Image (cartoon, rainbow, N blue to C red; front, side, top):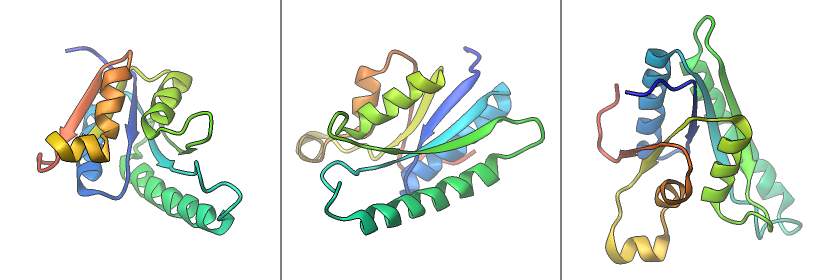
Length: 149
């Protein structure tokens, strides 16, 4: 098994993302790794038309991140978080996650996936799949229903 030093964890309020965050937190503890939680706010298309909505989305993202930072905190442990926004230059959530992973120097991404397949995935898309397909670093995908550690 590789030793990881920096683990990036994209999260949202879904149970799958919460399971991924719990597993990433346990892995970071085991590896003595830094951990960074991120939430991506899909701001592309909302710019200028709904600044109040962006403020609410950013506030909700910060509350979710603060919750995980507090859970992962331990003496001597490097825990951080960041709210990311999609933009005209980077409209895809997966691209925002990958850019943050590169910027921060992550050597592992842990992400939840609902495990949708077939037509539903083609219509809805899959952030986890997009991250896994385009990542140059290892990606651990936690599927819905996997037990928390």
